[in-house]
Length: 257
Length: 258
Image (cartoon, rainbow over all chains, first blue to last red; front, top):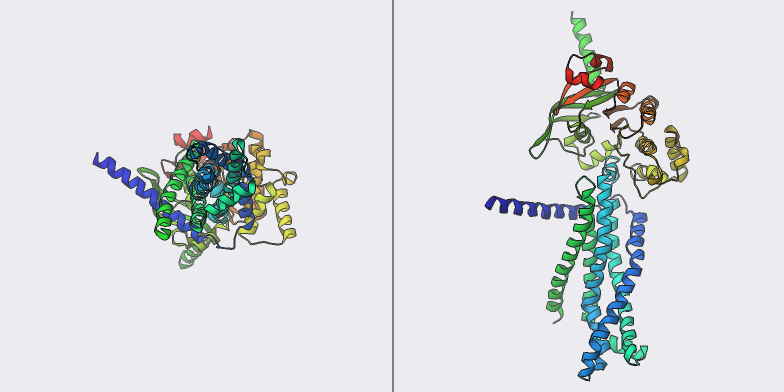
């Protein structure tokens, strides 16, 4: 029993150690021997542009559904005028960043995990290494940085579309002009609502890229490990997003309230 | 008498100078699994050594140690006069630029065309920027393996034999002094297998490379080997030419030549 516990602890400590080393490799290779601009832009295209459709639909529907769910309750209290403010605060502060990050974890972390996992299995990463090219700089740095940059941009777009969805939702039962809805939405927002939520999306993006790359890069040999890498990338990235969110809320509260 | 001793010493020194890979009492384990138990081997300049052995005997592990992909637990490993375990990251990178490695699957980068696959080491290792020079090197390398027409294709559009040829072209593009082949003919039909084996010999003569070739394919071994080393249970149990080993009374060795 004790030895099983010790071996489990050792295993997890090894994983933590590996992740620390991987972080170090990532940091050391960012600007080593120049920067892989071509691959970085290609990854931005894959991570950012190719996720626009999914993220846009998700964002719009979040705002739309949130409005439809809350409007009747607020109406009962005669507080219908608070709908735009409530929607904007909940979307911008919490729901937008977290839901979009989870969607991106499912789409991006799994695809990075599977891609690098299959490159590992087919010895493409070894081939880069033995030909003196730098696989960490070419494969890992570009993907992590692309995710770190693209996830916040996708979240901002999704937040905007969620507000639009909210306005459409309000107009199903009532008639509220776009000017009034958006003015009330933005009036409810403060600096402390917008900045921390944008800042945390950079960390979400980093976590998605890092976990995807780590799981793919360290997958074992064999085709089965590719599926496992993709799957565990999604699970771990989602867990990291929730943990980062919990920490971000605490830090925001400490700073602003 | 003194003259004879001096002459022998000179010959030994010349032979030692000629050694491009020196493996001495190398050991490597993965957990409790001792894969390389004690191996020693010298590869001389311009020589092709074939390493024969059943699957799981440590053949691939040996060349992965030579390429610095795996770190041996014990023993000495010198490549081009440099002790691999003592090299810094930069020195290892420099050494690898003189080593070519042909992987079993070809290990072509799926997301790149053949042209990009071949240009990749040129831009990353040689820091080449001249497009015209790069194009010439890529076309020359593809011409060496007879695949000029595949330049704009993706690896998924190529057959197994073509992938191996492109992999070989990518290995050759940096003009390495040593090439390590990991089962170059596995999974190919006998005709393509023979073509690849003959290509290995032609390229070795053209570029004056030294090679370690891991294979189970005796037809390939017969064509490419100057010397054959037979590996069993993590050790080399015999070395010699194809004809010498073919006459070996040892049943295990003899089984390969039946």
